[in-house]
Image 1 (cartoon, rainbow, N blue to C red):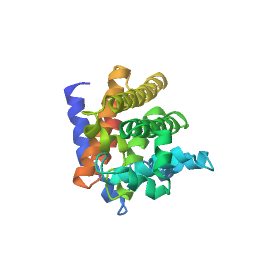
Image 2: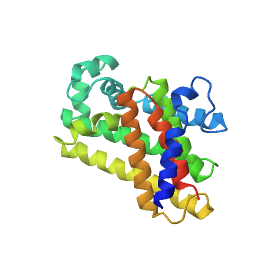
Image 3: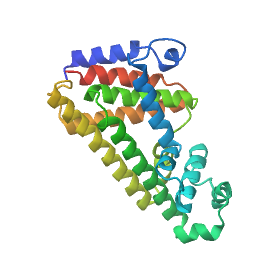
Amino acid sequence: MSSGRLRKAISRAKASPTFDQVSKGQPSLFSDGNVTDRVTFLLTNQTTGLFSRQLMTAPTTKVRILEAAQGIMLEKSFHSVGLNEILASVKVPKGSFYHYFASKEQFGAELLRHYVDQNSERMRTILLGTDLDALQRLVAYVDGAAAMMLEGCCKQVCLVAKLAAEVSTFSESMREVLAQGSRDSRDIFERVVREGQASGCIRKDLAPAVAAGIVQDLCQGAMHRAHIERSAAALRGAAQFLREYLAA
């Protein structure tokens, strides 16, 4: 990408309306607001664990424990949450916990794997399972994340982002789950980029693997900033930047 085009993309992203403004009646980044609504629905339901309940009418005790812990740890942290608090929320005795998990660290790895699997399924549904062109799908994904952050008052809604820095330094098993999840997400982004290049909506001068990494890093950085600043403006700008950067 030329430096001139990069500067133009950054300038356009900074000048774009924030999602907070959109919520007050400004036009959406997408002309079809239903697209963002559908993406937000998928993001919200899977993030809160409701998606798995839609697939399983009677979730197992193990799944109930994992999903209860997911919600609690989003509010707190891995180390600050005790087993009693998690088990009390789903009315499960302590003995049942140790039937499924040998230790809290193994439980943490299983928790992250459960979340990462849901996240990969969500990404495939949004990014690989619609009739929008590839570029629209990528922008819709970020736009939907902005809507989800706004609905949650810009609190942290991603368990990976919440726990990554905390657990990666003390648990190799948990770090490996996070690393594999990161690779899986990047692979999905790369598939979308390749598809967009083949159809002509995404620039062909970009290396797909490199572009996928940029998309992933941009999304994660924008989510982090949105949480810190309590504003979805960063995600809004990220969506606009992706449109400028990737467009053929």
